[in-house]
Length: 281
Image (cartoon, rainbow, N blue to C red; front, side):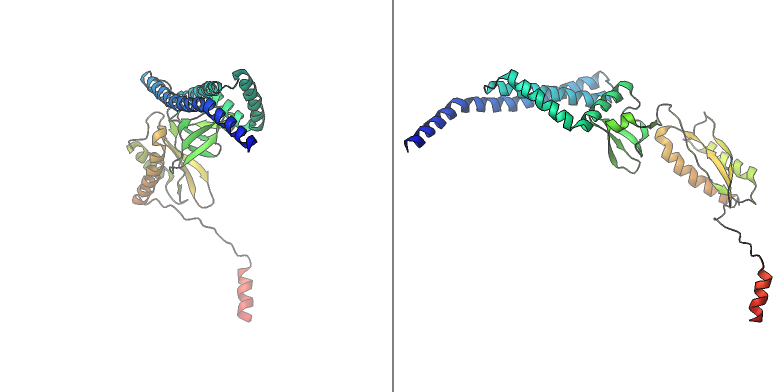
């Protein structure tokens, strides 16, 4: 019982000695996190006021917020009596171990830095990468977020983005829409081309420069395939694609230009002999 009483007194003394420090540290941690949130919000407003590149803003906010939180955490630890130098050494060793274990994550971080330096795309660009096509919504520390035409949000690791092929449809400000309608071999090709060109010239979202093009692309098995190539702004790509496809079909139908179904001609050799054998039986 004496030992228990002694341990109890020691524990009570420890609580009395460290409880105020722990309480103060928790209060400072809570206040510090609120201040960091306010500082990051203030910086975001400053970035917006100074027209900072929208691509950089989320990245800078994340980096600054992470650095401030690490500094706050180290300050709170030092208030509890932990040697800061020893803690930083331990933190560095732990960081090295974690870095080796999370090489892929670090590669994504490095990829994000490279993307921001070389800027193959920015927020709002229409791109195709890693098998996905969509508009860039945000470039974060580790991932790039794009919104696909069917309104799906795709998160692509920055490491893969920086090492893979990227097609940017927005940089040039113009994009060619490729349509390939087919007409019958019996149809008047010149008439069909004129009809398609008239549709392109009358569409408000088809650009005049570069001029739209209509030609013969291929002599396929059952149709003469036309190349109908209007140019549009990247943000109008899908509007032009779907609307021109529909309007070309309606215009060809209205002018009696046949669009054939896939078909195949089958030639029977020795058909008369087979018919004779069938009659004898």
